[in-house]
Length: 120
Image (cartoon, rainbow, N blue to C red):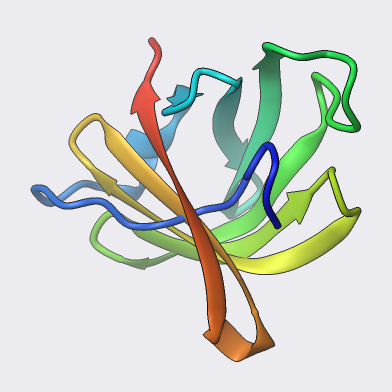
């Protein structure tokens, strides 16, 4: 679950509506950008840019999907990690222009989080 760390998590801040996550987000390490958009009744995130294009992650690859609202500025769904080819349960929380995503295994016993800032 390490590496590109394309997982979902939590951020402190004010209330936000579900549609506010739409747009492009830059990972805190500067390694990738993800574009979130509606996909049916949920939100999905697709890799829009990668600093290192030689790894297993590819631009255009969907890494967050079925992210459905689960509270103010919060979503729950699935996160795909291109590095290990596995899908994890995921959550994300939006607070202003800060997004934290977290992917979990073992029923939430082990989670990894990544922070993102709005790129557009």
